[in-house]
Image 1 (cartoon, rainbow, N blue to C red):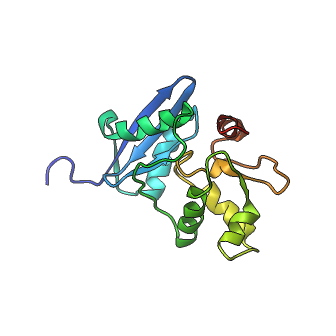
Image 2 (cartoon, rainbow, N blue to C red):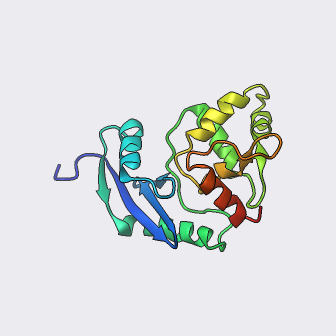
Image 3 (cartoon, rainbow, N blue to C red):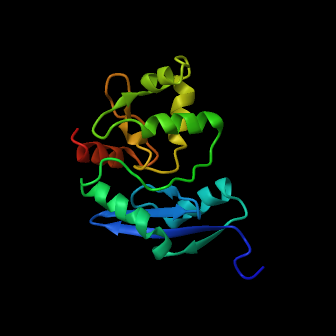
Length: 171
């Protein structure tokens, strides 16, 4: 079976202006975009939990097409990602992430809006949990979800990163 008989996650460090993000993909698509300025350990721990038995291999070439779109987004030139995604989550998480993916650039929704879109208006807390588990920051725009009064609420990448992304999109 050769050296690469184990399933593989490919990763790369994206450095652009003052952004430093770890990104990872399978052969099917991007599966992870980490928070700004976090360590490789966060990617490694996430990989162990969500892709057990996979090995992490650094490969800038395999990640290039993903990094290009993320950089275009960070430069304000890209409004909607077109790169393939490889999402692993529960059915509920996948439904929530699909709704997030539909939130237009520059707009925000509340947790209640997402719960209502799922036809589960009382599932606001569960929606929050699914949003917090989103593995692909920016690409699945969980930063576009705010509290009922428009307040910035928790974000896996931290509130500073959420604020920067919303400002980038004109908020």
